[in-house]
Image 1 (tube, one colour):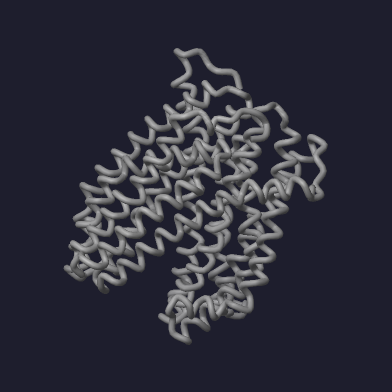
Image 2: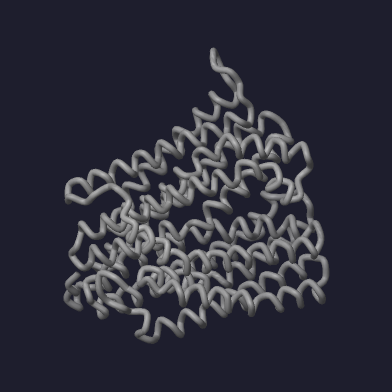
Length: 452
């Protein structure tokens, strides 16, 4: 991609970032609507089905979250080839990434089917809740391959600089999921009521529809440019190879969150209840930052594929600037609204106090979080997965002793939860920030060309 004149470049980059990030953000916000719709409908069946949905939802979101590299690695690979002005190769790589997603989805669903109840029990559920969770999981598992194909197809389109199509498909799927759940769960009119199994089935059908819609878009593009649709062995293996470091990176992030939740549980019921709210707010704030990172992935891959390191540096600086603005604004909003938010989640004074106190740390950490997310997105776009995996591992190793110290010395109160979040922000996030800054300031990550 040719560099723009200096006087115009910042505005052009702003428009490009907004064009990619805004639809990506809207799609990210729409995704949780699936589980919210399921919760609203299943909640009418009673406490046990709703608890079973919660356990099953945790298993499903964890499985899909582990494979998020299918979107990220595909985005980077496709964008590089697009930047190198080789659209057929970009589509070929995208098709191979989707075949990899299908294979992984089928294998995972087959492995999870006999283990559905055991997976729920591993979360500490009662036998009754585990039965309900297993029912939902087995009804929804046919849609798991489709969920992973959606990830890969979304990565293809992001790599092609298109975030609007995934938005339309995601919103449509979320809207279709609502009446499907009502009909299949409650069985109004002539339809039989399937209970919690109907909720899982409805979600699977919606995911299959989303996957079909996205596959059609990619297939049309492939046929238009004479790209074969059969899986290419070398391409599928390349997609797997590119994704492994990002899988390792994701596992370190998951391990960190699990370690934090376990530490909160050791700090008492009040701390754990408050932590659940705080981590939910943190995750919601991360959606905006992740949208910025997605824009960084797509643009960085394209500029490096075009061989333009200067433009890539321009993108990095501009995204860091926007991340700083978004981080400060998010922090100010959280800081100003913490005392208003806490009462919405619990009537307990201890829980409210712990939420409000921990949100101060969350607010102050937002600029750092924005910096980390932006650099993470740019380096993913550059295909620098091995370094990201190493940075995640270093952050986890630095964070673990801090968690032990908090569990050992901090009181079981709001203060204990605050110290836990201080350790998370000042330990894991800070170390990631330093390691990513060290990488970004050098040139080793900025490898140009259609293939890294």
